[in-house]
Image (tube, rainbow, N blue to C red; front, side, top):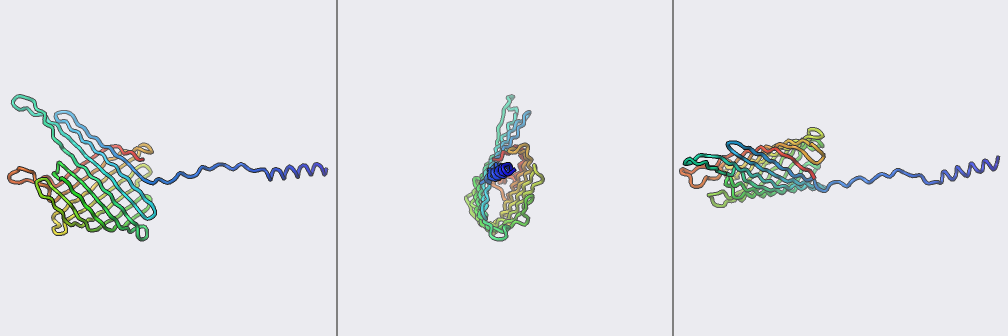
Length: 267
């Protein structure tokens, strides 16, 4: 009996001392340093008139500590071909319906309650159809997140700025402006999102001379990396460029509206 009890005790002791095999849990994936996306939009028509409209953009965002960095670039190009009979001959005429490029960079530094921030922003744009040779805007300022949670962000920004601009048929000009902006991001559900931006830039010495930039984008995921989206973009220039060699002098249209549908790749 004593021998049996000793064997049982020894076996129990060895079982307690034997190492247990724990489940191996892989470490969590490191957070993304950048959130980036590229969009491609294409519209084509054929028939009595042929048209092609191409648009592309790339956006990148980085957040660390109390800093936010946003940058992006976009382009739009469109061409239209029409047929006319001149002197009994069929003549095809090609014209450019859209040709503009732009880029921006904005840095935000959160300073209180993770809602208020100081900012610095730079924008550049060229629009050949609207006869904008270039327009560069530099603007410091301050902003505030009125709403900031996982599903909804709403912010406002304000600050002084300076614009360097050249319109076709006009001399170079630079002027001071006040930049007022509003931004909205709404996560509708797990697959759909809405983005909206509005920016107002008047001359400080003539508030009747101003530029308004606005955009709305609705986006829905089709895979983890791909999404379908529709974008509405509008630029309003209260005093557009003159059309060269027109008598009496005529101006380009004040409003430029674009509707683009395409695919976005997130990486």
